[in-house]
Length: 351
Image 1: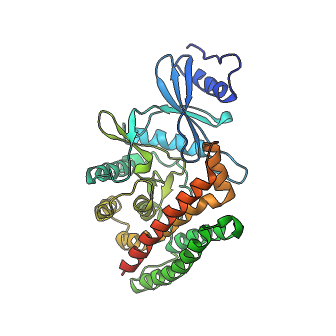
Image 2 (image 1 turned 90 degrees about the vertical axis):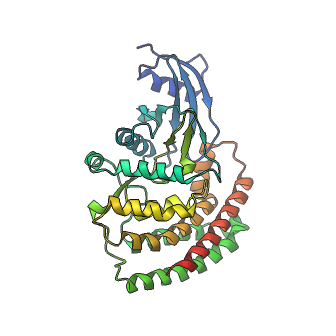
């Protein structure tokens, strides 16, 4: 194996990537190119003697206990075995430097308005492959998904906590977001009252936790904002730093609420039908999913407004040191406002 040696005067990140590549059989590092910033982590296109790879450097902070590297790398290993070709192949990791190397996918991101029914079918197939009986037998070592909860009451409390965090922000720093947050809180309180009444009418317990064998292996943050279209055809899903065991209704709620690349809402019924088929013993899954959908629209309103929370903004700046904070906040307010309108519509249709 040829060892990769950094050039004299190389940057610390280049030195760290060189050390990572040296643990593989890829040969020496020829170039390191930062990729456009997105999300919470930094990404690099790395050319080696044998091929091009993707290297990610993961965000860490004393106030954020998640091990993003470990979660994503282990989940990608699992998904690569369960659904070969549907995820970037994992190559190597360097825990001390919070780096991991993956297959570089030659593909194009989805843009809003591009997602078709066929694409949604591919996402359903991917989720189903992660949850076959054979695959699940290898999933014992996977962690709980980030913020995984398993009762209706806990899902409601999850949004309550996110709203509480927004209320801890200095009002002077909220600007135009303050009025939107107040409207969201008022609508949220009304929605919770309605959901609790509907659950009682349907005989659904708000406190009973979903049984272990009714839980799913979830990519989390699942959607076409975290997918690439291969040049030669096919879809590759990526970004699994929140993945693990979860409630299937939360996966559905997130999938149809994420705003970056919206999924046509008319695909919800088919995705739900396939989920029910995957977990036939999980009675009332369809009714729980209907109640959960507006809950997760409210959660995504909070996520969009999370850039007003200092730790969230720090993650964004880690991924993109040149971030235009004012421009980002203006954009996120617009996203949250659009989600809020969808939340009102879905809540009105809830019966």
